[in-house]
Length: 238
Ligand SMILES: [Fe+2]
Image (cartoon, rainbow, N blue to C red; front, side):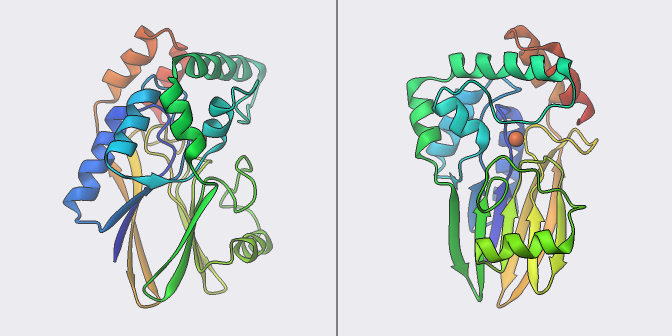
């Protein structure tokens, strides 16, 4: 069984197109997404429509919950006051742009998806098995990873939220951060997806980096009145 997982698309329809084409080319049996449909890039409605039209199941991210429920804040972390202001502008813009149909889609997403594939139990969620806005970075200690595995009650966990891909194998469990399709933060501006190939209890994984027209999306960010800061972040993969 071959599975593609798309993390954090964030309104970037061009990156999503590249991700989808790669998943089809690699003959995946299933595709899932990890939430955070809007924000940063302008195509929140287009991304929601694409996922629904292509029957790509997925989970709800913090950004989906807060846009869908019209909350005050997106639940994202910021590093300084300037970033906090930019994020606030982007969040308010996205809440305004998202149609009722998009908001219904965002609110329809489950917190987590679990299934058995061959001989392993897989859990997909946005950030952690119990909180959608906690940053599960690679440098957390093994104890944290194993506590999360116990909460997820799964052999393989795939999640996003930090926008930085990694895989760790600890105590027979597989932990995969799928990275971000539409807003990578690891210094590589290309879209990131992960492919899983599962045979029996063996889980092979491969991160793909996919080029697309970053400049087109960067200029759409500015043209749509979103902060130019987001365009620069996209160009630089940060
Ligand atoms: Fe995100």
